[in-house]
Image (cartoon, rainbow, N blue to C red; front, side, top):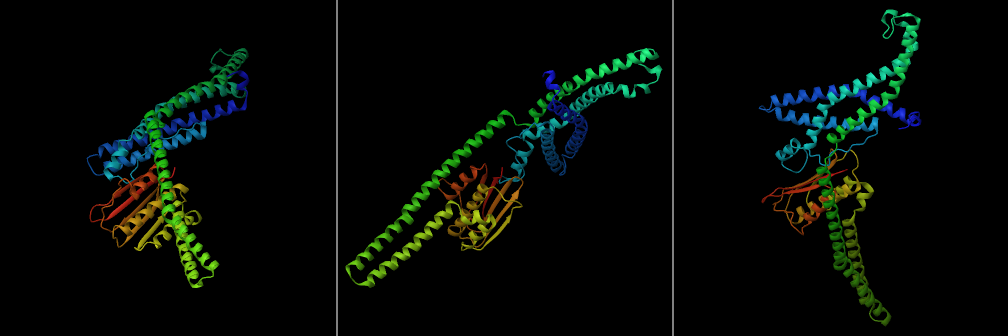
Length: 422
């Protein structure tokens, strides 16, 4: 950077931000190191008891929070945005508890975050010491004329005393401060950049995690395309076999009625044809409404997920208990996926499961919406190719979600979907 650039406001603003980050590195390093070492030691010491495993999970949870705070702090002070690892397994999900527990413990990202928090102490010491030393020499030397008179004559560093010695000392201190003022921002900048390499390596995703995230995204897009094609084919089939056929019959009946009236024949037969055409029109209109509801229900867009599910449950000939616990609205595509999961599950419970009661629970858990539909029917549901549940799985997978069906013979059947909101 040129000397002209050093005179700009942006340079000194960046230097001030880096100095702030360096000064805060030591207390943060002491905090994270003490907390992580203490909790890991307690977890290891209590591993033979029932307390060790929950304490380890609590420790890893705190490590996740601390890692996220470090990312936010770096973004706030330095303007450096670091995305977290693509895969962040948690204790919530459709898998068995022991598998979810192992996913949390074996996650590589959380152990990299743990290593970063431990290394934050020596790195914080280096950053703090360099920043304090460099800026203290710079500010102390430049302000020497204001306080140099207070140093006793016998304690002069470079000269033995006298007015000349004090003047030489004052001038040398000022020159040293000026040199340090030029060097201090660069010293801190180099150390902060080196610390940034460590931060990105341990707090950011690895190449393998990015590749797996890209593969999941590609699979999700493929599933979305396949689901869109299947929906288009279903709409074409329903229009051809349902509403279109009824509209054709309606046109035929109206044509016959017109012929009767134009020929001056018996009006009673024409009236019957018009009445039949009217009934066909009502049935066709109902089929078109059902078809439109299958694309995207109007009540879902107008009133939200809770009223839409309540309306859906009211049309099922089985008693349904609906519980929706969303502290904030989910994205439109997430609510639509949750709606269709409940819709298909209720239809299966009413048509095939011979259920006497169904419970629907939709809740926001962290960054995901969890949908669970449980019925007391005879069970036997499966996510086989070509079934409605298979289509649901593709719809949920397109949003990076997971759908699991647990339906042993004899029941009960539990359909659970975890749909990320991000």
